[in-house]
Image (cartoon, rainbow over the protein chains, first blue to last red):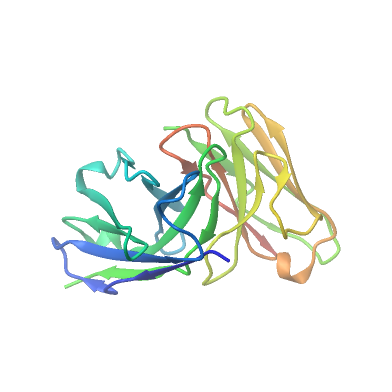
Length: 120
Length: 106
């Protein structure tokens, strides 16, 4: 059974960098056919996709966030990470990591999510 | 970006009833459409992929249909645990985008 777990600080100060990690168990992030994504949900709102890091290590970022986003991976630890720079209160959200399937681009499973609040 | 519009944004239904949720894409996406269910405080859960394929483990009372720009999610014989928010997601092209959600309430 594939499981994902987000970790990182729940509080980040404005203008700083938000850093989150997603630890994966039950599957290798280097296995073909899948990509690994970050998705966020503002309080009471819809879902916003950040982009992906592919099993090969290649990345794609949503153009709306591209200038502030970096995704990376640690294959030895089987985890991948998100960095979002220059955060503001508008970046306060629940952040999810999820596995995407190449071809169908469906997300399954998801991590439980982590609430990140941007505040001084 | 492809815009995904869901309707209605919320609806009231009864246990045992039937619910239909609509999702419209701003351009044709063939059948590259997925549906998720989200309960309060939980992550979304995949229900339907490729417009009409039922994800493993999902009850058969959930079904999806449509192609091109117009899609529907139907829940027959609502169970108490089906009261949740439902999201569609286009998987046709990047950036992948989601609809605004439909809250199904009692």
